[in-house]
Length: 307
Image (cartoon, rainbow, N blue to C red; front, side):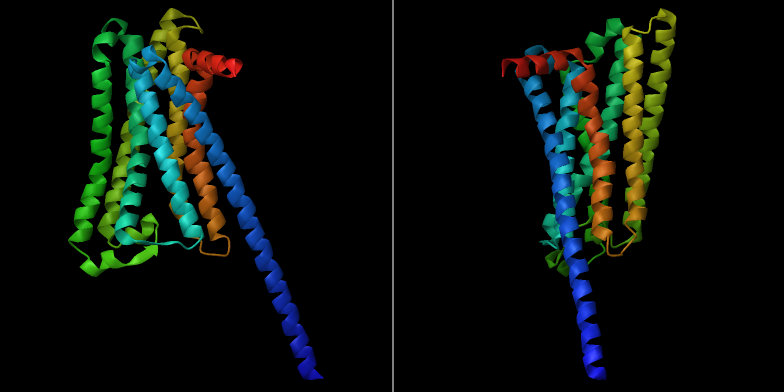
């Protein structure tokens, strides 16, 4: 009789565990579909803006819009890689170390380039408002592409340093392994953490100072004009939105603390971090220019009215 009771209890526990596992799997699928939907909306909105950019000749020659288009492409690459890495980790996809390192390098470099792009765009608005006569000379198409090249050079430098440290410290067989592709999986030495953390903090401090400086200068011009509808006031509001976007990017650094959690809901923590700290800041750029900018808003209205 006692054996039957124990057997019945064991069956009940097994049944409850299987129910819990099924609910967990269903929740993962629903959350996965939600993330994919948000990502598709983001990509669709970006593609609409890029179509406007590439089909409007005078827009492609404007330094402001060149930098904006670069930001859209950079953020699209970053989010695509981020989503792939999150899903690969969640579904236990093991990737060879060399391929994983290339993916992580591109993801981290594009993450760093976003604040650099914000700083250059803020400087472009500063020149346009404070030195309007010199704007045509200083903010040319050629210099815009040079600034983009400089961003990528600076953005990739920490990864080059990290790679040199890694190959000089680990054995060759490390690169023949397969692993769950995460940045943390490739940080095998304390100095690598130091390189990543110091470059991120230094970049955010520098960009914050640039945005603060340009905002103060632009708002001083706006106060002199005394008009809330002046170009200086509009530029000041755009710089505030840039600052908010930078702050959200800075908050993404806190994800490393939340991902120390290793419980049953670790996968949900990773995906929430991806949604809040990667997707949300990069959705602000299309909203800032797609809705507020007259060139893009008019072109988008024409596009949909024609359809």
